[in-house]
Length: 177
Image (tube, rainbow, N blue to C red):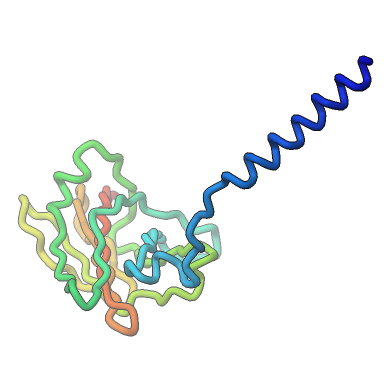
């Protein structure tokens, strides 16, 4: 008798499982292309500012924070201006560099975005009392300022090829011999 009761309970459990399977609502199929493709570019490239990249010893990097970024589409054009970097970096630590040391801009990309293009050009700004003044850039490099002191700076990376967009990063240098 206990086996018959156990068998009936087991059969009842199987019937209930089948009933639940029949009641499952079918979810819509996933789109064939990634959602990001229909909404635009979603990558947020991170910058590395490398000090004396061509030296034989391991180069150091400058700490930076992302200010803002924009990717162009048919509906949206980019024309970013940097936030005065002193306001962004007020509580950040500076990176010590020597006068006229080379600073090189490099971008890291996640592996899934490895083929994402490098920026086509850069603009660098120095915050002088809240006014952002443009500094000289050669390719993807600048020289640290000649005079000792604290320099609140921003770099604007510009993509103008197949991908169009801009990204701005702020960094703080302490120039000292």
